[in-house]
Image (cartoon, rainbow, N blue to C red; front, top):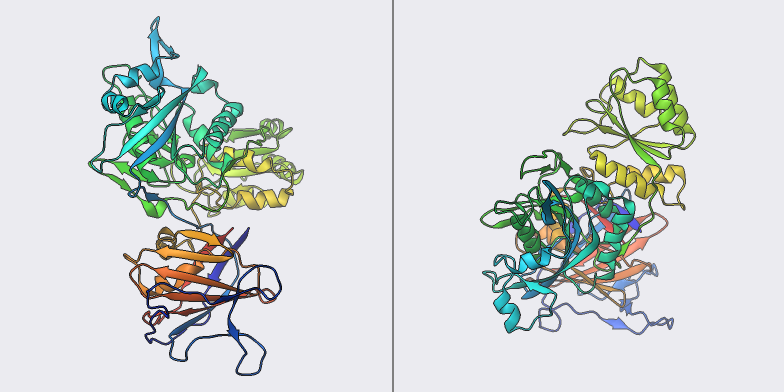
Length: 546
């Protein structure tokens, strides 16, 4: 995977009008058969007029051109954004019922999972199943269907119930792997997935699944309830309905958690209340969606998917990790014993990542552990905020080899640690570098991940045919400068010195882009032919190339 941060070094614009050569308003490419017999198309280049031997494009002199040179630097992952399914009439969702309070019944004054009754109850609830429609359409016996929406759409869903049903307190990495594999096996058959899960450890499971699911392109939404769905007054029905609607009507390619009208990123949540319907919060990231009168999606916050890469579930997991919470008076001996046989530790520290610096034995125990290869992540005990090196007590941990966990929750940090440490092909330093990167939106991205880039990536959809990348891009809300740079957001497939990209902008004149990559200088030069307005200022773009 190549990851590029591009800085605009040169901008030259001439604004002239040039119609599409075929008069259709659609872009055209003048490809000739490959002279080397590779079968790949080549551009129709004319000899260089200056005798340099470098190819030049066959454009008329009066065509408007825009030239940029970009320097390859660091990585921030941005690809294709999620979207609503406005063009799809009916969708299918798989509901995986692992257990939890939502499907429990009372036995001898205690709640316990009740098998084989959940689906029967759903069929009796008109907000969750339209029995008349199911009979008219002769749906499969195990299929349920939501009432028709205002947009005349239906969401059909099937429930896969685990046996035995589990209390979330009893779940472990093997259960996480089972959920992931069930999603993978059914990935092509359904448009989205809803996982019913107990609330006590749901934040751990959503964090774990967010890392296990690689190249996820569909919504995976966890939900549950504080009161069983069988009770007269409960939160289970609304939570399940909301999760189904979002999974069926929107393409949000993330592992999420839906609870009490809010959709959260799964690796950003923590449970904060055992006696409230509003049981979860996302301390350092606003909800991805809020379901009130309308469902409002915060598309700018949604992680971008890569639609060209196959979805897989990685179940390799290092279980030899743990959480160590500092407290006043903790001894070096306690820390030393805890670290003895561990591969990784999430160290929960005070404030913005501080630990006592007046206890040399404690710091020495940490330093010796990191030197022998143990990897330690510093996360704050505070509900909100991030780890910094503002104070000397925080700097002491950094000097002892502890990695800053930024604003990750403890659940996310532990899952990420287990996921990364299981990668046997990486060295210790490579694992540390990976832990410091934002992999699934679990930590606040680099400031370079700007609003400008989000707007570009949000409006980009990509298809790849014979090495030619075509982008059909809606122009609503996009400035001319944005349109010219849309092709740079996702420049994968640059395997030859010259790669041609043709981009068509809806309702706008053609934009014909030519990319030239200089491997020696690590520079990417790009020329655009369009009817756009001049760009008067340089800008910075960040994208991820798969």
